Amino acid sequence: MTAIATAAALSLPISLYRPAKINAKKSVRGGFRVFALFGEEGGLVDKKSAWSMLFDVEDPRSKVPQCKGKFLDVNQALEVARYDIQYCDWRARQDVLTIMLLHEKVVEVLNPLARDYKSIGTMKKELAELQEDLAQAHRQVHISEARVATALDKLAYMEALVNDRLLQDRHTSGTDQTCASPSTSKQSLDIVKGKLPRKSLNVSGPVQPYNTRLKNFWFPVAFSTDLKDDTMVPFDCFEEPWVIFRGKDGIPGCVQNTCAHRACPLHLGSVNEGRIQCPYHGWEYSTDGKCEKMPSTQLRNVKIKSLPCFEQEGMIWIWPGDEPPTATIPCLLPPSGFEIHAEIVMELPIEHGLLLDNLLDLAHAPFTHTSTFAKGWSVPSLVKFLTPASGLQGYWDPYPIDMEFRPPCMVLSTIGISKPGKLEGQNTRQCATHLHQLHVCLPSSRKKTRLLYRMSLDFASVLKHVPFMQYLWRHFAEQVLNEDLRLVLGQQERMNNGANVWNLPVGYDKLGVRYRLWRDALERGAKQLPFMEPM
Ligand code: FES
Ligand SMILES: [Fe+2]
Image (cartoon, rainbow, N blue to C red):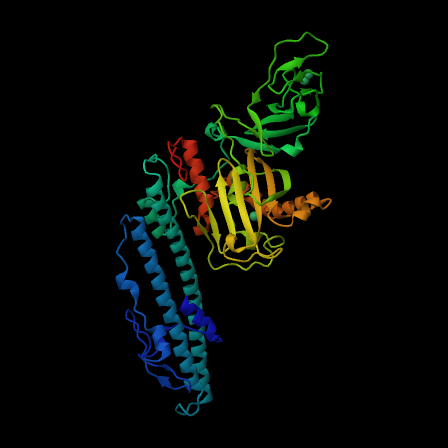
């Protein structure tokens, strides 16, 4: 990296690499030594000069561990990745030296005092050759830059895998051994070879029917404020239509959104005295699905499907699974000190897993959100997601953003804001003010997600009382989401045609990868789920 920076600082008009045309005092293959370089007056200085320090670096190739065809554990693989970086660094230094030496040659050719008499034609020819050499070396520097970038990326990914392995060893001993993980020895070797653990993370082809294990969770489906006494909220969940409404006691219930008589959607009707009335022939159902009125005919014993349904902390929750519901409903409220400013619901034409992948990724922001919150952001040289504990939560580096995936389909994030509209500081604790977000991605169907978005602030309380602010928040949220949507829709189309949307994960994809590994283990019925406390 130092060498690359130096090359840029030299600002040479052109650069080159053609070892065969450079005389013996230049590079020596295998053991690189510099014997002479420019001094301040353009003369040569000895190898003890400041420049010689830059180039006096040993060729690391002889020390690279011989691992071809061997299975490596993660630490060995990490060591190989480190040697990769050293080699790239050495290579880049060699390229810069080549440029300097050719520069020396150009000066020599042009200096009338330092050369024998030459005709103009001879000089032109020599200069043309040097120009060609310089252009070649310039290309070589670019290749070195790309190699260094790739090697760094690989090293970051390897470090993440080692980190995962250590955490797994510490926290999930006894884990179901069939659980796929990218940190096995075989997979580490794949990384060294430049391949990825494809088998463990293959999300391709048309979305498969939902696994019933994914249904055995409490799912938030609506905000309490959207469910008045005489209104109802229809939604789809796992390919089935449901509707929630409040009973006479104000307690919400969830029933199938299909009339038992002739399958008319119930939400097209109305809620009267705690019963939902079908708009076709007026049959009325209570919150447990029992038909209590059948106008113009004799009442029969009819019941439609209903789901366990509760209200907690401003949200309505349902349990769509076939196992008994767990006793506790998770808390999704923001931390103390925050006030809720916006609650927004959107129906999106994408599969919920793809939306979660998108929300768990921050590295895309400076490329995708260029008209909204990431406008003017620079692109960091390295983006990482750091997990202080084995789990599905951590924080982004270099962004002041904490993030968590909360099973089965929630993303919580806290964003540090130093100045209005500005993202500064290395972590959220350094920031005086914060924005807290909750995204619930309810799996409506294999092509649809019901998104519940809640935004809270620990400052600007007065905004809660500004008229029409809800509309403005909604406008901002839609703008941001639209920037993502066109891309994720494109992914979905590719995926349905067979492409793997997790074909090549890199270091900053850590949280998304962990979500997929968690979901994969859940759907396979693993005894202990990865990244979760042992049950
Ligand atoms: S279809 Fe609902 S009452 Fe007839
Ligand atoms: Fe985004």
